[in-house]
Figure 1 (tube, rainbow, N blue to C red):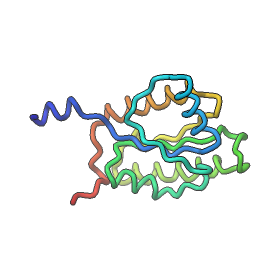
Figure 2: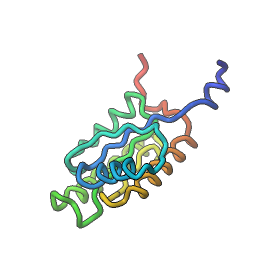
Figure 3: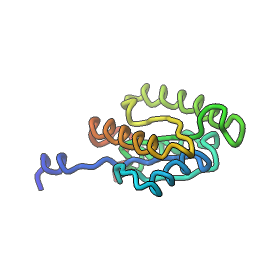
Length: 145
């Protein structure tokens, strides 16, 4: 397979770090409802997005993820009161840092999806996949062996 064929057949690897109570439940609803979305996302469920260490996102990019999605409860709906607001602040700072070191902004995405929004979850995944596909393979932070 030539380099051009490999690039045409390339599919992005996306890591989604999601809240157990809202976004994960929304993903579950999408699956139960048989709503189609791209299969190249790997979901990591956490109790609350507020507990995500920003270096988890950096580590995912270092280990070969082409994009990272962080998604939790809508503002005012967090099961831990303000975890999602804390996550939003951390993620905004992380995006500025990643931009400073030259990483494209569309490689890291923060969003909210509630438990009743299975269709929205599918649309978010589709949008993230399209944005990351347009950027091509990530190579800025990937560790070379």
